[in-house]
Length: 455
Ligand code: GUN
Ligand code: FE
Image (cartoon, rainbow, N blue to C red; front, side, top):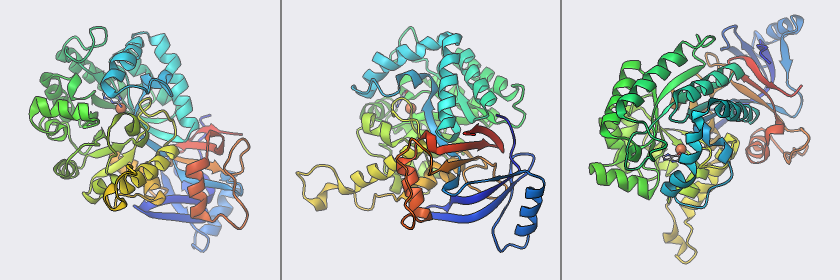
């Protein structure tokens, strides 16, 4: 379970730039003891043959089989761990009703640590099985359960960023699931930061704490200001929901007379380490502000189809220089896989570009130049996620952590089938994005440590 890898030989696919897929056959990756990639050697490089001979002699080489591809580990920038039991259901009502009717009652149950432990074990196992090597998690508004989530990620070897949800507004949060006051939520956020950073076995900070105001409707000004201060003093990551749906966006406008992005920024919550989930209704000025701060957007395409009332303009965000990565938004998004989020990103961008109302003339139906390619979507779920988090992950390159997955296109129980002579490297990637399931994710490494192995 916890073996560390020293060398891997196989076909490596990653995305060094937006839109550019790099396929390197017979690549030899050397991994240092600290779990970072030391070198990626290719046939023809002077050191290749001696290095290969050496790792063969020492029997430290993992050689991928034919039909196996080495990809960067998948990065999920936004999901809600306590909503895992709700995956695939409760998708029939708008956001505010969904929170009140289904989600808050479920999240309130995490006062029970035993229940939390069972759910989080199941979730983290499933995430790793699906190739998610890094996840940014919303926990619930309970410190003990959220600390348990951090411990489970650490023990299973998943790189994770974990936040205790802060939510103290009496008019939007129910009595049974609300922080008693802003001070308590701020104090417990600070406690979580201290506890996660000092967890035994976490010296390398595989798991990091996140300042987590739920969203503007559920937080008082006092709480938002206090959390901005906590983020600043601890140089901590921040995650929240931003201009997600018409209702949430208009709530923020009515309360502050300005967009969520501007409000969060004034509370000190938009930083290089901030991930703003959704952002469907942000303005061009908001995008500029997010880009100026170096913050990121977690694009959650499937969830947005249910709750957002609009398609996030990924292309426009990228043109504004905004860092963008992908999120599942479990359980608003009823899917576990970031490969699926990549495919959904492409699909939603096509709908945005073409438009959806067949009653309109084609020329006026959509938003021109909105489409995202598969290569770009792959970048967002790997390289883009790493940049968003300001962590050395997402790319198979020296200096990066060896967070990677081996996708076996010959696995049984899968619709992913390669046809000899028909499927080249990049086409193989397109097929992986569409058809790989967890059976195809044969091996998963995080920081050089094997966290899933099919054999
Ligand atoms: N806005 C506030 N809370 C939530 C949540 O749990 N999920 C989603 N999708 N949006 C939210
Ligand atoms: Fe969410």
